[in-house]
Image (cartoon, rainbow, N blue to C red):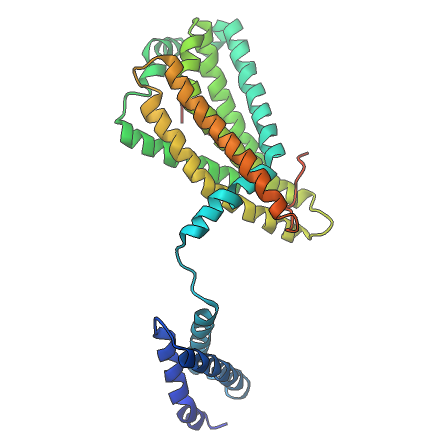
Length: 334
């Protein structure tokens, strides 16, 4: 085939197709012309590749065909409807489907942290083995409460937000390996348990709960969700459902993980604002705890109501793998 002659014969069609792809709006006639030129150019590309594989021309025609294809199928753009669908259906449904996993994580985390609180409170001398006597005394005197007021509130909220989102992302990303998720949970359950045990041993349990509860309920629930979904990804690799290959099961669970990670950005933003502005506020403890409790119950209710409502609507959709289940910074120390 004479390549130069072929290019000269069809150059005007290619240029016209490129022009149509650049138009913001197309009339009915122009849309029909775009479809026809797209089909012809795709044929031209096939001919060039099979009869005269010129790399430069093949690359040019490939780009043109892909551009035209994107114009025909529609260019994705920002849509408030898509945002509403994500927060009204997609995200709560993903969290709701994974509830056995993150509830199991919450129970395990609470058991480990509770054990260390109980042990250190009953054996005050053991606190020295973890953080030292001077550090324990300083924590009780001013360190624990002072942590929430030593930084400017807006910058503190942003720091907490990004840190917790990063921890959640690590849980989700490392879920396929399983062990790193357990390590992160162990590390932070231990940290929370030691701090709580020290304060309990000095009869400051009220201080501990009054500072942890406002933001900790929502913050830790977000971490539990991330860890549970991350472990669910790992389980999809270990025991994929019969209808899917191992790779397909992991890909499906991983897609759910991405959706959850996006949604948790908002959850951690709210938790960060509560920790920075509400937790250290000079208002009655009942008011601070009430704000945190309302935010936590609001999130759980949102997941339960929207998730359950969305599930029947997608009853025909494929369920993510691993439906049944076999350290992030603790609240206040993130």
